[in-house]
Image 1 (cartoon, rainbow, N blue to C red):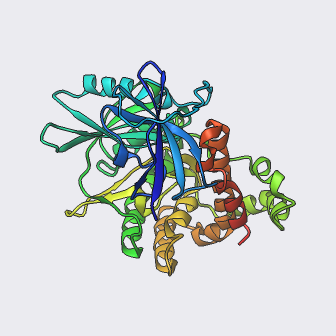
Image 2: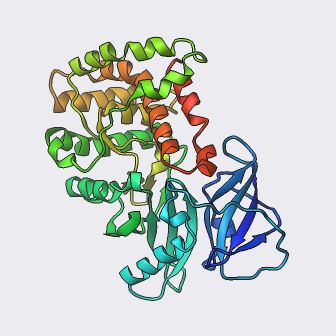
Length: 371
C-alpha cells in the first residue's frame, strides 16, 4: 500500500503559495513525512484526508517553505487559527523548535523532519557526516509530562529509556540517539524481554506512588465516551453499568496501581545488537493498573499464555497473595474501553482537520470491548 501526497505551501510569513502536484510515496502511514520534507520545507499539519482513516489514500498537508518551487497550482487552503493547534503545527513552529535545538546542542547540525501529527513532531538530528546524534521531539500540551516520565523511569532502571538530553518550552525535548531498530511485529520472545525489563519499574512505583504526582491519573469517564454508541453497540450499556462491580473485583485481586506506559507494544521498543532494550514514547503513560500494559503487549501473540504466566509470577513475588491473572481477565474489556477514552481525549484536544487520525478508533475500541 502507498499514499498520495499533496503539499499546500505557505512562506515563512504565512502567505499561501499554492500546491505542488500530487506525488506517490511508499509509506502509507500519514504521520510519516520524511519522504517529502527537507530543512527548507517543513510539514505543519494535515489539511485533508480522502479516507476516513489511515493508512493510504490521498492526503493533503500544509507545509512551510522559503523556496519558490516550480509547478505550483492554486489551492484554497484554510489557514484559520485554532485554539487546539500544537505550536509545531503553526507557521514558524518547526523553525523555532530547530533554533532552540541548535542552542542546546553544540556544533554544526542538520535536521530531518521524520514525523509530524497531532501527537508529536520528530526530527532526526545529524552531524555534517550524516551520523545521528540526537532526536528533537515536540509534543502537545496534553503530553507535556513525557520528559518527566523519562526522568522517573531512568532513575529507577538507568538505560531503559532514551537518554533525555534536555527538555524545553512548548513540549520540546532532545533525546540522545539510541542505535538499533524499532521492533514492530516482534514475537513472543521480544515481548517477554519487554515485560521482564519493565517489571522493576512498575514494582518500584507500586510502592512509591507519591513520586508519580506529575503523571496523569488513568481513571477515565467511560460512560461519557460510550453513551452516544449505546444504540449502535449491543451490550455496551450493560458493560458500562457493570463497571463499578467489575472494578471492585479488580481491586480485590490485590495488584497495586503503578506507572502504566499506556501503549506498550514492540513498535515502541528499540533493541540493538548488544541486546540493549529501550522503551520509547511515554506520552500515553498514566497512573493505573499494570494489567493494561501486559494486555497491550500480548495482544498480537498467538499464544500469550506463557508470557502472562511469567508476568503473573513476577507480581505474586512482588505482592504475595495477589491474583494477577484474574485481574487481567476482568480488565480485558476495560482495556478496550480505556483505548476508546484515550482516543476521545485526543479528539477533544486537537483541531478538526486532524480528527481522521483518531475518529474511527473510538467506535472500533468500544466494539472491541464487547468481543
